[in-house]
Length: 257
Length: 257
Image (cartoon, rainbow over all chains, first blue to last red; front, side):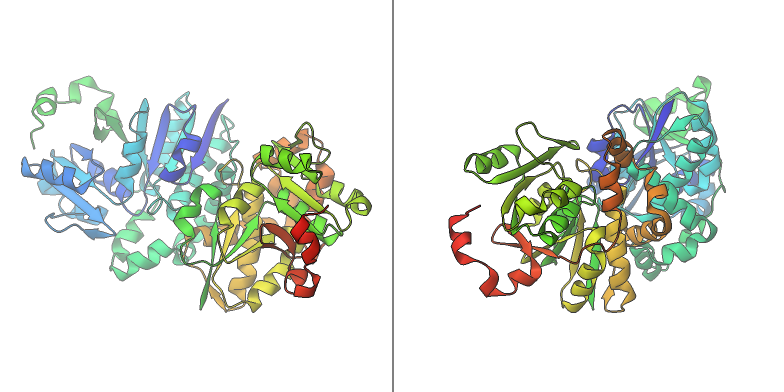
C-alpha cells in the first residue's frame, strides 16, 4: 500500500520528504492555478525560477517573463501569476516559453526539484491529477506552498481534496496527522469554499488587490485537465512529456521563445 | 483588539512569535496534561528541562525526576509523563519539586521561555485557562508541541478550542490561517474527540503502548482548574505565583525537594 501525505509548507519539507519520489506542488492562489491554466491554453512550457533576478536574466535574453511578489506584478514585468491574464493573452503566448517567479509557488517547486517526479496541482486540475496519481504505483507527497513559509488554508483544502480521493480509493494510506487534518479541512470547506476562505488572511489580502476574478477562477475545481510536470527544469503538459516526438528538441536546445 | 494566533509546532515558532509576550504551550498527549494534573494534585512545582541528561543531573542531586521519550519512561527514571501516574503518586509527591523532560512538550516550553508570560494549556484546564486569558490585555500565541516538530491533531484541537473561546468573546481577532484551521478542526472534533483521533498517528502509536487510560484522561476537558505558569524556570500554579507570600523563598533558594 502506498502512502499519500500532506506537507503544509516548504518550511516543513525536510520533515516529510523522506521516502517520496513523487511530489505534487500546490499554490492555489495563484501560481499553480496559473501554471495549469497557461499550459492548458497553449503555452508550450514554463520555466519556474525562485528569484526575481533570475527571471530578469531570462527576460534580458528575450524570453517572456512573469513575476509576482506579495500578490502584485513586479515592476519591469508585463505579467504576474494571474490565471485570468494567461487566458486573456492566450493568443500571443501560444507555443511560447514563459519564465515565472512567484512569492511562494516557484520556491516550493524549487525545493522539490530533485525528486524523480514533480507535478503541479490546483483545484483547477483536481480530478485529472487525482486520477493520474491513482494510476501511479508511488508514494505521493502533496506539498503546499503556504504563504511565506506559513500554513495556508487554500493550499491545504486542495491538498486535502487530492488526499481524500486517493485515500477513498483504498489504494493509499496516510500516517501523518497533517494529512488527516487536510482531509477534514477540505470536507468542512468543499460545499462553500468562498465562505470558508472569507476567514483566510490571504484571501482578505487578495481582495484588497481587486483579484476577485482570479480568486473565483482558482477556487473552481476541474476547469482544466492539464497536469504540468517538471522535465529538465521546465514545466510541460504531462501528455507531451510522455510523448518524446512532441518535445520539440530543436526549441528545447535553443530555448527559443 | 488583541490577537490570538495558533502556531502548530516548535519548528514554526520563529515565523509566528513576533509581537507576543504571552505564550500558551500545549502538549495534550501527554506533557502539559501531566503538568496541569501534577500541580492540581499537590506537586509544588515542576522544573521542565529539554534534555534527558539535564534531568539526570537534577536526579543525581536528589530531586524527583520524570523522563519520557517516544511515549515510554526513560530507563533510570521512575516516572514518565503519565498524568494518571501523577495522580496515583499524589501522596508521595505532595509539596515536592519534580524535574520533567519529555519528547516534545518540554522542548516547546524551552523555546518559549524568554517570553514575559508562559502558561501551560491542556484540554484538562481548558475553561480555567481560557477564562484567565480573557482577563489579560495581551496578544496570545498558542504553541502546539507537535510530534518531533511535525503538526499533530490533539494539540491543534486544544489550541482551536482555546482560540474559539477567545474569538467568540469579541475581544480577540485572528489573522493567521493556522488559527482559522485550528478552530475548524476543533469544531469538527469536539463532539467525539476519541473517534476523531482514531485517525491520529500519535494516538495509534500510543494505543500500542496500552496508554488508553491516559489518553482518555487527557482528552477530558475541564477536569482540573490549575493554570501552570513559568516563574524563574519553574512551573507553579498561577494563583500561587501571583501571591508572593506563597512562593516559599527558602525552598526556592535551596531547591530543596
